[in-house]
Length: 65
Image: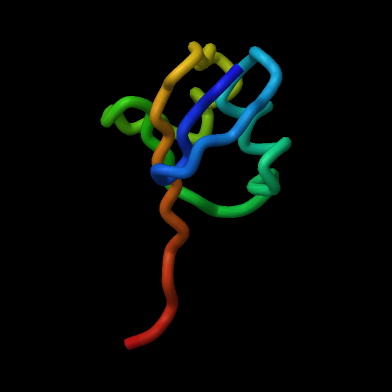
């Protein structure tokens, strides 16, 4: 299945947002996520089923001041 992660196309197995993030190397990291422009809380990621062509945004917090 084809998804877009931060505007880059990736092929992943059909499944959940949590599974795709794990496959793409984001497992266990503190990140914010959105699917097709809608925020997805970390607790909801295992329940969000992805569809072909979905657009996922991942943002990692930055430290500094």
